[in-house]
Length: 258
Image (tube, rainbow, N blue to C red; front, side):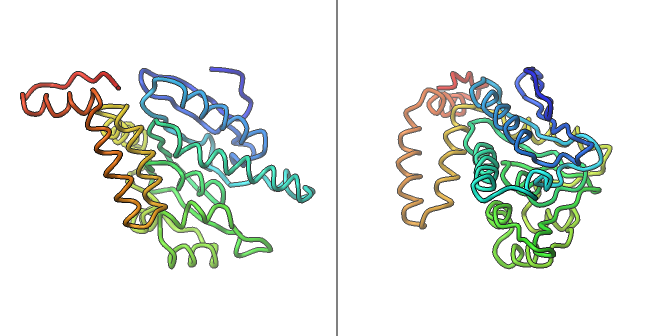
């Protein structure tokens, strides 16, 4: 689908499958790679698909930013690269479809940021996650924006200051990963969770996802104000009425997605 050099984008029934396809560069997120990821997410967001499963080709899920892009970059160029990456990460939360990272191996720095930015994460027992900037002459400032929102301040400090790889089991305990399975079960587990996450009204999920992201950035009082108004308004939608009616009538719902 489309002419891409760094990703593979495929549509299968009601799901998209987006594969980062720079195995020779450990799926490092070069500027060109990020632009293609953004184009892919735009295509998905404008479609009638229910979700997208994101994976990485080769031995690494993603090694983060491509230092060959960055080592000689001046300040405006670095800002452009990092804002391009930020737009990709925000898009994972902003498109109405369910976004899932299927992590088979190591995800570091901006690669771990991509994982944290997805709605759901299924990981192999062979996966690992790290924000290694703190061990070197830099720091994983932008990756930790997304990662810290999943794992909390103290664990984010440990992960970013130490820079060590945490295994998939630890990542799940910390809240970065939803489910950990053996490598041979990864594909099946990802699809199974995605199917559960996309059943029901796609319209209601799109609104719900956007609202949840907003409320998580608000005070408790403001979050309830938005949630009450959104829930009250959504009660008048065709799908909300159908959901209630089908429950009371003990029948299978017929979603209009509006």
